[in-house]
Image (cartoon, rainbow over all chains, first blue to last red; front, side):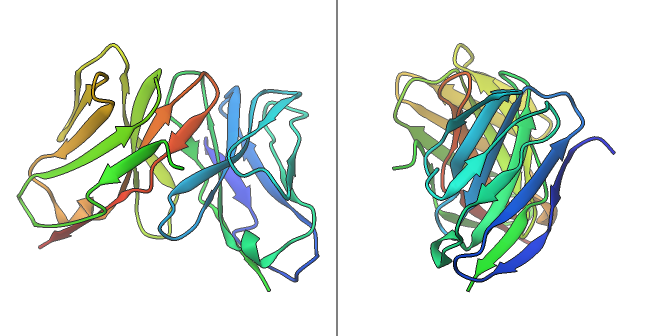
Length: 111
Length: 110
């Protein structure tokens, strides 16, 4: 099925651990982004990419790394998890000037 | 601070009534988009209106854009219980960044 696939759906980490949230899309979209959603704060942009090999920071990039080696994949790495990174993470992709297709999200808890 | 701010934060209406949500933003935009999010799910794109457009329709949705006031509104006509969700505006501030507001929670009572 065409769309954006995120894994895992749920994750619990201990403070200081690292992990990678996976995101893949099969629509050949140039643009991909990672957002985090916290209660009452809407979605905040973490990192985005406009094509393979090109990434840039969004509003809240600290503590996260990304890479885009292929058009399809855009993984998000948490370097050293902190309780403040407890959130729901969404990956999304689109063509330039169009609306986003969102993944179903990863619910992350850092204890 | 958020680029887009929705108003009201929460709205409760009876089935069959119209629902209006507003969005204000701060900087120039290429386009403005509206999304719906059902509880615990990902966001779904509803409609996109470009900066040179003033009004757009899609089914029961009507979106207006006033770039001089930096504001937009989303009207849902003849609401249904299934329209219960959170609605977000998002501003396309460059070719690369889409910035979301904090959303309006809509409850449609049967």
